[in-house]
Image 1 (cartoon, rainbow, N blue to C red):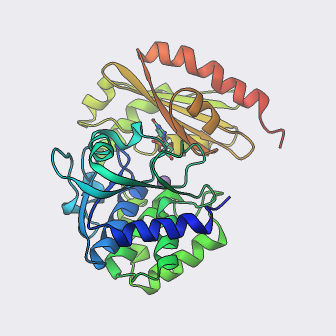
Image 2: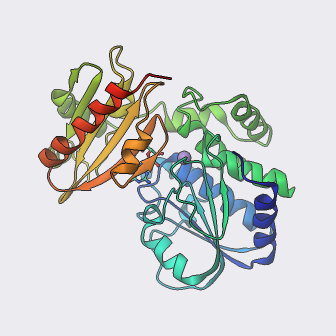
Image 3: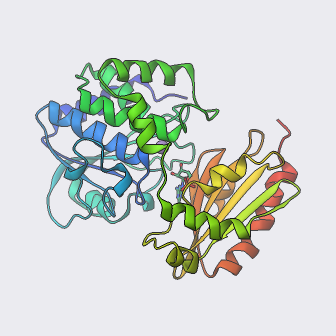
Length: 326
Ligand code: 5GP
Ligand code: MN
């Protein structure tokens, strides 16, 4: 259910009453995390607020083309805020160190998100699971409050919408998503440039990573999985763990129902899940301490790659066995 009218009003009132506002999104930020954060921050700047945008690890290189992305702080050690706005983050863990600092140093917290697994932390919730991206919820708040939509804000929000919907391809894409995209384009957001700089690009290092990781791919009775090791990462000359979109590629295999990519960290394993309609990996990720959407979710589990595979693959198998009853 969309949030009650009172929540939109409470959020608009809290913003109107605030001077210093901290804006954060989830660690290991993706296009929607950065797009919704920059959109919100830009709108607040337009209202004359003192805005501090921050996200653990800062802006990934591939999103640095977004206007004003250089203003985002990668860490936070001082400052007191009237308000913190958390975007695209379903729980307190996800907002990382900057969020932890923000929770302790902000008088109020708005939780703006679109994950059905959101824990409803914070004082005011704008959690809209029907929204295809957190950027859609930011757009709705701007519209509700009657705030101006500048080109830079529209640019950032369209980047969030394009990346989270994989170019308007995933089932969560609604006619409303397209209406919002149209409004953002009318405000000056360059759709084809955003597509070209996010979805239609990859580094050669990512190709090298896939070359290694594809050797680990296995498909059995609808469950497709792959692993990326620290050694693969090193051979590809990459500093930070990523799957370069591999999990999205694997779930499109004809016979696949659920795709799982294991990403080995020094003492833990990050896991990305994708499902075809009819199967729910959000539930599985939540049970493993993570979260996400029905068709796209993730978590991090402690231990070795082998331990993670042994723990998680039978659970993914269960999702397939139980699923598709809808
Ligand atoms: P990805 O596989 O692209 O990293 O993540 C897919 C979806 O799952 C995204 O919506 C992302 O926010 C969510 N997600 C991934 N990892 C975690 C996690 O550790 N915790 C939570 N709460 N959500 C996650
Ligand atoms: Mn999102």
